Image (cartoon, rainbow, N blue to C red):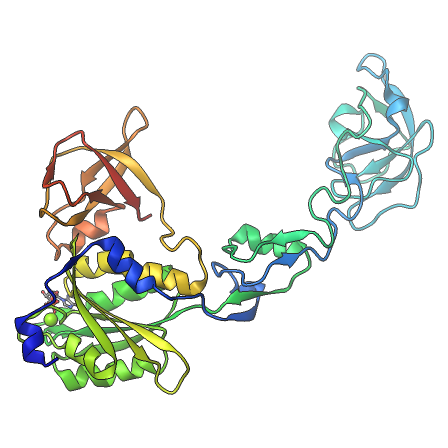
Length: 428
Ligand code: AMP
Ligand code: MG
């Protein structure tokens, strides 16, 4: 198809968001596994299940600082009639004692220390006459209340058992998951490789952030925002810089991305304006569709696939609209799920949503699903209330920055009154 034809006859169909997303995810699998130390595994996805290599606790141990006793010895103890036990030793964490608790004796015990033989309960130090934290071991101790057998004892294997499942494949590695992997004896884990995303800005009007700008220039804020969205979605990011609205320049920079990335995201230049060259650039390096997706913001969208240059496999190419809010929202709706699928997440969306009441009336384009930038707050009754975070035009980055949610308004509604219930995607 020639450029002229493509411009005069852009794909007439208006795709639903779900159809567009399904086509992008079609045939896409998690990236291969690699082994990484725990330090590098945060927020990655476990590729293979692991079993515990250890039993934890390794032995019955004390949940309190106190005295290990025979429950039968302290059965009748009260503050008025305490029972005196002879202290025959101490069991501290990492310094256990070989001493045994026999009738009429006790062993001072510290939290986490092994329960001595003969003992079947721990009396916390608060329920004795022993001073708390005293260095010297008392000769005897007065026990002021009874404890049933098993009191304040953490049983062997009550947390982990050697050979038992510890984490399932597909687990999102949270701080807690990493800690339990460490406790179970795993210094490294097999995780899906992190997706690589390369980001290219296009537009003759763009200058690097922080540079002295010409009177007709604005800063390239999309590269910064999209890179951060990529990192937040679990990807490794490389910036391809700013291309002018020139086909050869865009193609050259795209090729750098195709040699490294799993996903290339280009912002700007994707409409059918005289200087919009991104679709032709995608055409030159692979296959591309120019889509009109029924979302607001972000209707024009180019999506394509190209062979990875000098490597196995395919690179997905996204041409996102240049308006900063449109590029943010279309990344959130389309690129983030693709990155999460590549990273191995079964939940490709990875966001919570809540139902909220609109604090003001809203209007939108008919026939498109709108994602309004809103501030989500709890009302006095504890229910969620959503108010517009600022102007809803797709260039108003300040409203996006003030928002903590995207309120979804259906294709079927042109407007909603104050008090209407909306679903809001929580961004942070
Ligand atoms: P375009 O999609 O190229 O027609 O751009 C639409 C609007 O987004 C224009 O006002 C551009 O100046 C603006 N824009 C495009 N790319 C960027 C960028 N990287 N950073 C900030 N604004 C941009
Ligand atoms: Mg442009």
